[in-house]
Image (cartoon, rainbow over all chains, first blue to last red; front, side):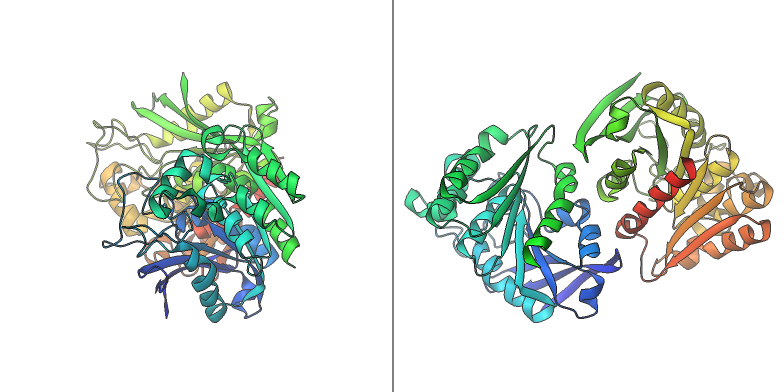
Length: 278
Length: 278
């Protein structure tokens, strides 16, 4: 059961928002989906999942990313999940980089997080089933991208689920959360102090352990204020190079971490995923 | 003196926000300007002014309209003023359709509005001078568009200032404010009860009195909740037809009044203005 919350016609398709009770998180969850005209006509379409960053919901990219224009041109579905479970009985933290809006796309094992913070299961199991049941999503042509924490989610969940995600890219991703303040705080809280459990959520470790069969595209702004402390994409570039993984890392001069940066390169990414998927 | 408030690199250009003390309104005013790369290189560029609607600031279109992509492709400057004077000593109304964010692009004559609500003077005199002084704006290639109340502003200010604005279009404009609740309320407050003073701010009356030398483009969604009570574009269509003015009114099936509608057709409008101006 999914319930339609909003629907706006947009670029001859429809931008919709749905709500449903999630088994994975044990909470109501919202997600947004852009359906191009051919999807509204019932044709199966290649689909891109976009995972948002800290402080975001489904709405940031949907309202500010301009994704619908390119998706409509190419006939792609874009799916935008929320970044954490929500609700009064969901554990939270006063800081903006932990708890609500900061689920880090993992299954928490520690209290008070373990009950609801199961975003990995939600994104990789429950949501794809919902998409297949309710929309003309071609699950054999599903890609994933994301921004910042969502870039971390895209890279790690793709490498852990190569049968599900056929293409992966990222915007200013957290590539090595085991070695940055945001990641160390989140993983300590959600996964506990045993760092051996962290590696399965770290893109740099995963590319060494599992590799990636296809190409990877990453855009990163050079004027990004968290580039050197939190993001450090060079660690992932080095790991991919050493493992023979075909990464294109574009250090984009003068761009920051915000949505004017994402909006600038999102058309490229959508077209890139289309080429990988179709 | 204008002060840079924000600047974000975007589509190889820069999206900026400036603040200045306005002589017209007697208040600080903010406006946004997108400078494509060739403007950053000092080349004069055709320029489009976008006037926003009720409840908006410069930010709504700038963050949600996707204008920068098309403007960057064509090398156009986009200028986005605020919708009213702001500040603690500026008269306001509890309602969202009067006072702050609802300046209606006119010069108020009635108290308590007359002192600061001089958006017509601001948009048509002060702001063009600022643009010419500080940016490579080609004032001989200046167009204007707008949404809802801003569509009213675009149509009326263009027809009253054909030497300033060389092209005009609108999204879901208020075309006949003398005969709709939003307009009657605003004009009664800002201009007083003598309706003969209202005609110079009514697009339907202005097209009869002054005509328009060029083409006009209007997009209007058929699922717009205020279409029949506030907007009634057929009145303007009839007036243009009778006056021999070359209006294209596109009734867009299924679109509403919000920014997913504006974002869908803004690329068309920017390209259309470019063709009119260059």
